[in-house]
Length: 85
Image 1 (cartoon, rainbow, N blue to C red):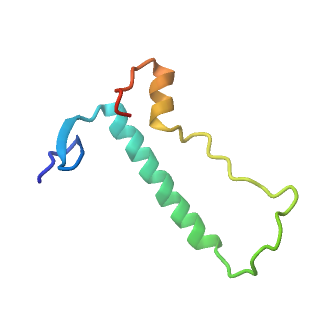
Image 2 (image 1 turned 120 degrees about the vertical axis):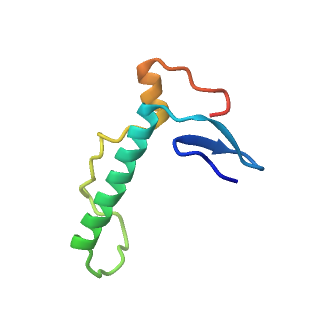
Image 3 (image 1 turned 180 degrees about the vertical axis):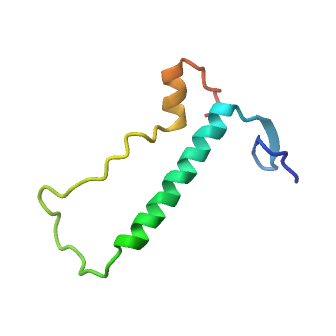
């Protein structure tokens, strides 16, 4: 099966559902960039350690508020999601 660039395909057997919107393509590009940045950060900071035996109190968390799931982004914009999502 060949899927045209910028199209959404799904199902078994696969079929082209629709073209992706510019917003969806931009969201995917941001998500890919975020994972690439995580890889770089991991490779720079990774060191061998002993496993934790319990949760550390006040362990710092990574704040990634700029990455919003697409379904939430669409809800925020008022766009109706298809029933299949």
